Image 1 (cartoon, rainbow, N blue to C red):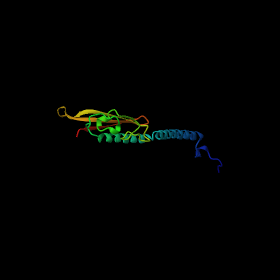
Image 2: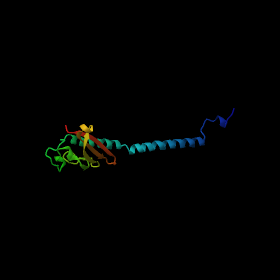
Image 3: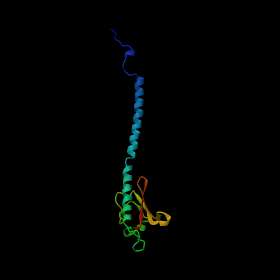
Image 4: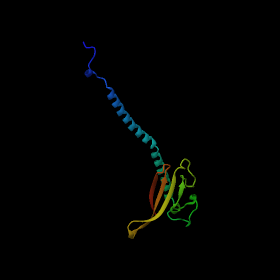
Amino acid sequence: MKLFSSLKDSRAFTLVELIFAMVVISVALVGVMSVMSFTTRNSADPVLRQQAIAIAEAYMEEIFLKNYIDPDADGEAARALYDDIDDYHGLSDSGAHDQQGNAISGLSGYSVSVSVVAQNYGPSGAAVAGTKIDVTVIDPSGEQLTLSGYRANY
């Protein structure tokens, strides 16, 4: 009867195998942790983008609900007095504002600008006068989103 087994019959790990396994597991953990860090750092981006889209849509809806042609043929000085789509050209808000021009709390980190440009649509012989409206929103992280719409005198 043998009291000591030979090294060939041993089923244990050697020190070199254990160190190699620890190195492989460490490299894998570093990779997983870096992905988690990146995901956590950028997790608010979709919220900022969705809020920027909502702001742009609100401004665009406000503009589209106004008259195409100025009913009183003068430029209005305050946003609460805007009565046609051309009044919005050059509008620049630091922070989102409502239709009366009042700042909306919690949205001060956004900036909004509006461009209203006349464009003709259709073939050159039968072109229809229209307008292109661009609402650009810059979120607090600096990402820019532009929503474009087209309006004709209907």
